Length: 105
Image (cartoon, rainbow, N blue to C red; front, side, top):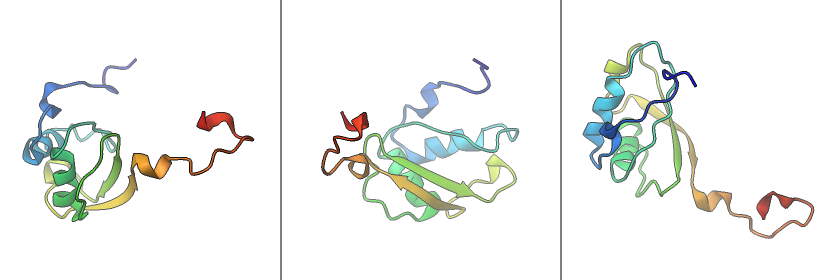
């Protein structure tokens, strides 16, 4: 796997949104899309700070997509983003099993 495509770092083992924002601001500009996995309350606060998302809690295994209209990662700042997608584990629950679809098992 291309090492430029997957990076693990202790920098995101944080519970502080400012630390996570510091990581984002250090992303090389050659990347226009990134997926970042981390911990709460940092990521709930980050969504609220960057996008005014109004989240009480981004749950474990939750996914939030933020779109930022910036030319450089260094320019990411509070209020620069829009929350375009929010998926929580509860949204993925099957209400009633469908015997014709075996993916729910």
